[in-house]
Each structure stands twice: as structure tokens, then as C-alpha cells.
Image (cartoon, rainbow, N blue to C red):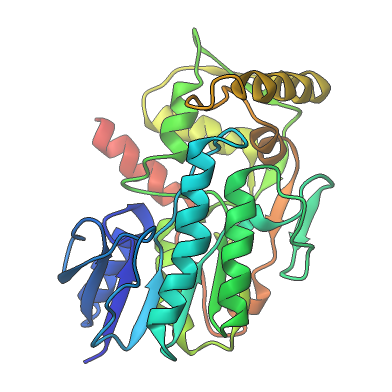
Length: 305
């Protein structure tokens, strides 16, 4: 029986990977500060120590610090400690075992439209600490011969970040989005999970992971709002206005490093420009995305009653 070590197994993506691995017959080591949903807990603080991976055949590294902290803030330093230093410790402990390292499409260079973007798109110029630390962490993983997965905007049951932030932005029945409608890739957590549990035998390197087809941004957001019984119309903030507001918000946040800015250049870039991932490289390894936003919307609507 294969033993899979899953770091960050108490978190959103890691818990799905751990539970699915167990359901498929693997033994699971949940490596992190808190126990995961299944298997045996192996305590590990990514900022302090090398994890004990004794008995593991495969390592799936989902542990990460996420967010959009102000530059120079304690939160940015903590993010580096987890996403970069923690990766170095994890790779030292893996000691030749296959490693699947979950990165993010946030590592890709921002700006121009990123339609059908393959893995050779430049990895540079990230607009926030998350993108920069994920890029630095994945560089270590790639140098060590790991498989690196680059999903975009992971969503699904238990998501503590993407959808809650979206719902929180609705004001008086209006959700303002930067720029006009664009085409975007999203990644269902089920699709990412399948990739995580398949990729240990793939050739080392980076692989984009996304849903079967991209979405129109506004249609996708309307569907999510309806599923959560949130009645709101979508408005479009001119891109120059949104970019200027984000710049001001980030400057003001530097005066209060304990508080995240209300709007960031990263958020504007991710929402206002088309970002579509080409997943052909992963498909050539036999991976196929089976889940789409429709599945999530139906489940959320049923739960909302």
C-alpha cells in the first residue's frame, strides 16, 4: 500500500488531497500544525523545522501561506518563511522521494493578456508577496526535480478564500469589477486533487492545471452569487480608475503594516486581464479535468436551500 504524505492537510486543498488519497486506498500522513481529515498526524511547523517523512512513499506539498500582505510587513516575512524557507526544509526531508509541489498561476508575469498560456510564459515581475514567494519556492522545487502544479483561482467546498472574498465585496446590491468582461481559467479543487495524486509519476517540471474550459468572468461570478443567494448586479470600474485606486490603497497600507490593503494591483491584474491556462502538457500525461464550476454552483445552491 502506498503511503502519501500531504503537507497542509488541515487546509483547503490539502484536506481534499488527503481525503481523496485515503478513499483511493492509500495510507496518509497529514503533515502540518493541525491534524488532517484522515490518516496519521505528523506535527510540523514549516517556519521552524524539517518534517518527519518516515514511511512516506510520495510527498504532496500543499502547505502555503496565502494572502496579499503589504510590502515589508510582518505578514510578508511570515509568508516567505512558509513558502520559501518551508519548501527548502520540506525538500531536504523528502530525500529522493517523488515530490508534487502545489504552486500557483500567480507566478506568471502580469500585464498583457495571457490567453492559452503555456508553462513557458515568463515567471517574473509578480505584483505581490504571494506570487513572489510561490515563484521562489517553486524554483527550489524544480531544481530538486519535483513536479510543480500551477492551478489558478482554486475553488470548491470548504474554500476559505476566493468565494468568501467575492461575497464580501458586494455593497448595497452592487459588485464592482475592474475593467470589462474577460475570459478566465479557474481550477476546481477536485481537478487539482486528481492532478496531485497522479503527478508523482510525471516527468519533473511545471504543469498548468485548470478546469476543462475557461469561463466568462461576469457569467461565472453571477452564477456563484446566485448559488449563495446573493442578489447583486455587476458594475464595471474603468481599468485606469481601478489601477489608480489599487496603487493608492497599497501606499496607504504601508502606514499600517498590520492591515491588508482593501484593493491591490494584483487583484486588479487577476480580474481585469484574460488569463487562460493551456493544460495540454498535463493532458499528455493522461490527466483530464472532470469537474467544472457547474458542479460547485449546484452543490452551493443545494446547501443554501
